[in-house]
Image (cartoon, rainbow, N blue to C red):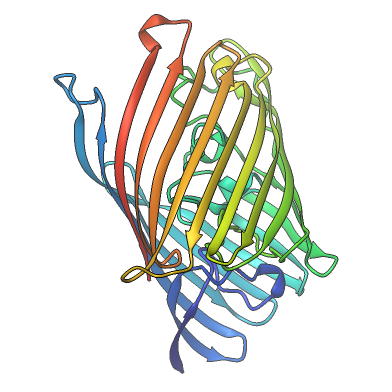
Amino acid sequence: MKMKLNSLTYAVALASSAMMAPTVSQAAGTITFGEDQYVSVGFGMRGSFSSVEDAANDGGSSKDFDLDSARLYVSGSLNKYIKGIFNTEKSGGNDTFQIIDAAGIFQFTPDMAIWAGRFLSPSSRANMAGPYYTLGGGYWQSIAARYGYNGGTIGRDDGVALVATAFDQRLAYSFGAFEADKIFELSSGVADVTNNADQSDELMYAGRLQYSFWDKEPGYYGTGNYLGQKDIFTIGIFGRSKEDGAASATDVGDYSQYGADLLIEKKLATGAVSFEAAYYDYDTDDVFESEQGEAYAVGAGYIFNEKVGWGQFQPFIRYQNFDADDNTETERTDYGVAYIIDGYNAQVSARYSDQDVDSPVAANDKSTDIFAVELQLQF
């Protein structure tokens, strides 16, 4: 038995080309038992200091240090065909831990696998990248990409999915069936979720299809920005649907989410420029109009090749908007700069955010200024 260090994906280190991750992923320790047999262990954390306008008890600005995320990553392989992942996350303010990923992965061919257990169901790039692999850090599309924000296990679901690639790994596609019984659990706009006697117990069906015109993106758990390491031009479409997936105390309706996203990154003489965009359409059969409507997000960044001290600077700007059918419009603009020390293993970012809520209820109308400094480490 020997131990070595290598670079792993955020979720799992897989030998299969269909599951390989970008080289910007986390470092971890791997214990190798034999050919195609290993166990890898790593951990990650995200912490922040924030000052939020009007959030203190006296109406002034709040000032808080927070441990936003703490994760333990475990992956393993029995042989070239059977692999698995087990990941945890700090849950809420009481610092208990919950299982976010626990899945078996059956790699039938280098381009086709079945995932079964608890994991991210196919969805938008923002949700598949999560808070650790995104432009500027954090799950920044929490207003627009609402399914990743909602759900009791941080966007995860119990289910099974086909994960595959084709056409020399330029086409990546996934499709699965999931429980999806906590779609609105963390949604602030839904207060009366209940077990309605008229609600059937159906599965949610989810799928994602993307095509890479430039460098390939064969991984399942993806990334929102390659930090100047790839030339990317990838277009994706995604959708989710669950019959009777929206239920209140008085009404039951179907839930669906559909959308498309785009990522472009190009290496230039002094660095790399990036642009991303996403569109979302949400439907709850008018059960929850606060969670029904259209949303979009755009982001742009530039990472400089030249190192300053330990790392590289990456200024960025991000905007997102959700226009709900209850006539509430929420938008946020982020202006910031990230200091990239070691890819997604070590980085610090600072940002200023302007968030506005335009609501027909006067008491809900508000504009909030936020300043935050965030630290991310993965080992």
